[in-house]
Image (cartoon, rainbow, N blue to C red):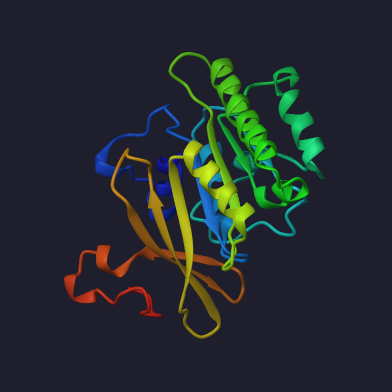
Amino acid sequence: MAETLRRVLTRDGAAWSGEENTAAAGPPLLLLGAPGSGKTALLFAAALEAAGEGQGPVLFLTRRPLQSLPRGTGTTLDPMRLQKIRFQYPPSTRELFRLLCSAHEAPGPAPSLLLLDGLEEYLAEDPEPQEAAYLIALLLDTAAHFSHRLGPGRDCGLMVALQTQKEADSGDVLHLALLQRYFPAQCWLQPDAPGPGEHGLRACLDPGGLGPRTEWWVTFRSDGEMMIAPWPTQAGDPSSGKGSSSGGQP
């Protein structure tokens, strides 16, 4: 899953180390960030990316419909790709459990990517660790079931977004520790100083041992358009290293 997100962030579709895209989805990926950090926009961009790979539809789970489609996510809003993204809106943890448990009964082709936005809202309904573990197990089992339906050599990827807080309580810490155990690939979205009329963040992608950690500068303009560039120290210009508080684009 880290490779799909890396293609979104590099905006050129290039795989790391010059490797070509393969059917292997890679380990589950956890996308972490504060409120308004662009998690939904990146999830949607990953959905568009996967929808264009010709491996199957994309299942996007979220508590409520998107108010608008994120702009500037690195992939044109091709109607054919949009048609391959199946949105479902389980309004509660109980309904999410029911949807995941009945996934094997769903008609049609198996998804090549399973996305869940707003995991923290479901966890907040019942913060007990065993409930969180049960939900994680259902997500992993559902992705494994879809992989089996896709056939040999093809996997269903899994990507989950979790909102983080500056002052996490003990329950939040336990949930995060549990998630990091089962989601070895992670992408952290960290706020950084933007330019006038913009807000920006630093995206740090760790593919879980399958490649190097990479960072990008992501800016959201006032009209909602998302702009992406390599983090200055990785842009190929040694003189451009500005540190995490640069506030400017490379």
